[in-house]
Every structure is written in structure tokens, then in C-alpha cells.
Amino acid sequence: MELLARGTPIWPAVLPAGTVIAGIIYLLGADSIFTILAGAFFLLAPIPLLLFFRDPERKIAEGVVSPADGKVVEVTEKGGGWWFVSVFMNIHNVHVNRAPWKGTVVGQEHISGGYVPAFKKDSERNERVVTRFSTGNGTWVMKQIAGAVARRIVPYVSEGQQLEKGERIGIIRFGSRVDLDFRMPRGLGISVKVGDRVKAGSDEIAGRKSPSSGWSR
Image (cartoon, rainbow, N blue to C red; front, side, top):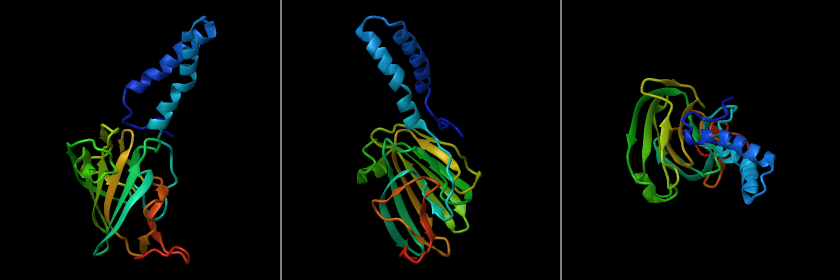
């Protein structure tokens, strides 16, 4: 298991060293307000490092899996078997994105743009990376969109690369949004609705019908 995600910036690397220094100062018992501050830093410094850039292993689900951790903010049937699902990533979510289905990367484009909050409609003009991959169900399009806090998208894949479902494909630092245009595989149906919470790789956005599911094909 990777403790920190690929693409983690360099600056968090100073936290462990700073934590050690703060701990030494605290243990020496310097009689000042700095002692308290050093002790607090010793206890709290690793938290943002692990929270923002953690990369846990996941058991990959059977259907079309979510490409991102977060809240489903849009589910739209586009016709002809095509669907659009958008997942908003909050700052506390895992920021590593995953392939929703098996395929081959046939194109990837980085598009410069703004940094308005990712839940707003205007965020469609934000900084983004658009990845297209060929599957047995047409060419799917995944957009990693930066937001007000996220300032960099780091892809892990390149054109021509073959992807397994659930494979890590990149990270958006500090959150934002991931949009997916996909053609529904035969025998599956949409299994999420607006407001659902999902995890990349381990939760389905489309799965097989069960007696209680009620998804539409």
C-alpha cells in the first residue's frame, strides 16, 4: 500500500522533519509559549499530510466503478445508451482518481482555465485534464476538473496505455470534480442518484440489477 499518493507535492515532506524538531523542543521543556506551539505542531502536523494525500488500497467493484471519491452531483441519461455522471470531491475526500472501466487511453489533453468552485456551472471552464479511453462500449470521456482550492491535476497515465478497471489514473490536489461520459455496458444499469456518496473503484455507478435496486437501463 502506498502511504502517500503519487503526485504529492514536495512541501509536505518538511512536516515530518518539523515534527521531529518540534518534539525535541517540547521534550526539552523550554519554558515559553513556543513549547506549547511546538507540542501542538508535533501532534497535529502529520494530519493534513495523511488526510490530503492518502492513497488507500481498494477492493474493486464488479460494475462500472466511480472514478472519484465524493458526492454524486449529476446523473443524466443522454440517449443511445450514453450516460453522464459527475462526482464532487470535497477537501476531506481521497483525491486519487481511478479508471471506471477497462480500456486503452486514446487521448489526453490538458486545458488551462479558471479556478471557480467546482460545484458551480462555470467550473466547466476551469483548469482540467480530459482523458479519452477506448472500451468495448465506445470511447469514454473522463474530465478531471480543478476547483477553487485545487490548483494542479497530475495524470498518471499516457496515450496508448492499457488500463484495468479501478487502476489509478491521476490525482487532483485538494478536491474538485470528476465528470464521466460513458456508454452503459450490456446487462448493467445506473445504480446511483444525486446525493449519493461514492468511493473511487470500490463503489459502482452502474451495476447489475437486483430485486430491490430499481435502476433503469
